[in-house]
Length: 290
Image (tube, rainbow, N blue to C red):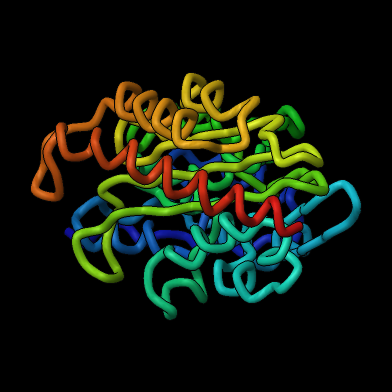
């Protein structure tokens, strides 16, 4: 008996995409497809319906203004990284985006795919959280906004309900003396999954004291996690050795990784602290230069 044939639909409006996803149980969004197609080849099977969202204008738009960035969920990573304004305003987020797969993959991969795949080791997610990004979700009940830090609930699990899809991201404009950084450790020089990832965003006052901080770790827990104790250690200081050591210790303590072939628990916890320190230094230097 032959396998059932999947349907393919390419709506041009958000409402039409929502209706398709809601009516067909198991329907999947096709944006970049860099995770979905791999999962199919590994035996997950084809969904009954592919909903290609790349023809919806809102999902391919990039808008920058004084409030920040609004970027469609189907905008590929390559287009994001090649945008000079995005690299200038959010260098860490741009760097994380440039770490998603190879050059060929980046021509297809998207922030929404990186987020909705819900891998604990996703590179864009800690960087998006560090920048205070929000995902705009459309569904049968209308639109809602979900902070990226609240979007993933576990490996492979998100807050999305039947009929819902991410349609765009909102990233608030950074303050005058603010910037971010993202660093990761991988076993190879490229094309690998993070053993640990760390995103840090800092806002400074005119004297160079840290006014606010966001510290986010990836690949050390079921989801990307913020580290409030590390953030508190950095705030109120000019980023000296004492505050950096305290932030590193907080990240090491907060990390709750697993043992696998890419790293032990002890190693990952140690690296979480090291990357927090390094990313904080880079973010601080960038913030000073703005």
